[in-house]
Image (cartoon, rainbow, N blue to C red; front, side, top):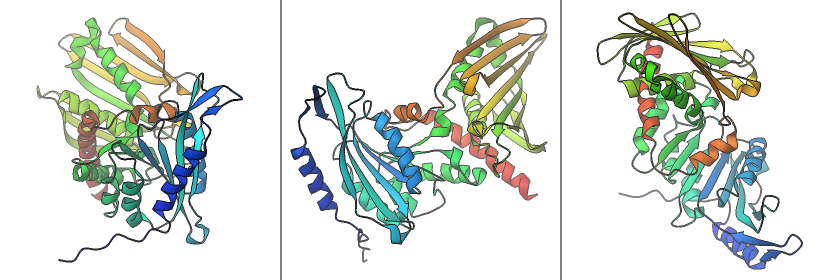
Length: 384
């Protein structure tokens, strides 16, 4: 049985390594003007795939701010029209502004690739990854999760990072992402930045039901309403984050979806708890400014048991939506009102968290399983 030889790369990998060695040998060990020691430290290899030069520049700015947390080799892979291909750009970047005694330095390699280049990526990733260190691939733009040629790309790294907020076909892509996660689970962990943004919501939800006089309500929830943002000028509604949140609740509490029906511009799910209690779940879009497109905006819970009844709500508020506010009420009075500030919408903070992990995120995968089940039911509904 003959084997297919690897594709020929449009540049010389060995020349890149030689140039990096030359730059390190010629670089001064100190910046005498600022009395700083220049430090060569590598803890990982970060590959960044950008669909165009504009996104590559955006990513380059974020990476420069990550260097103090994760000094690394950074390889920017930029898709361009074939006539705009250029030779690889190789440099050593040192962050002098944030340093006190030493300045962390990292290698930066920028490679332009033709638009249809998936077949080239596995060889590039495996060759340029630093040995014995974790390798991450941050994929900007829609994930090619339906493309079979993408599977070898993901298996060449330890962790794939993407953002389902950029999906062009949210329901179909959610289903395909789960299939991809299952196919590569033995070699590669997967991170969705859209899932990471749910951190404050998960923390607040857990905190709300952990209060002594509210604990009973967790096993008595009968209604869940989730509202996600839709910027009216965006042609595609993206309920992925809302589905992942509902999937997280279902996976933690053992709920199983039974039916789905259209509800205004969203969907109404009927779920069944392990105690056979019925839960009515609703996901609805809500007009919002552009920065909150696809983001969770509000969640409301109703719990009933015997003569006890209570409602709970969580919502974004404040300037730039950086405050998470929760409220709990029973039939007669307010049980709780609390708010806290968070910064998890900042891309730099999201990436710092993801680059600290190499193993699988079981909570995400379980939530993804449940969210995919909801998405499958929604697609069936659309076909009827």
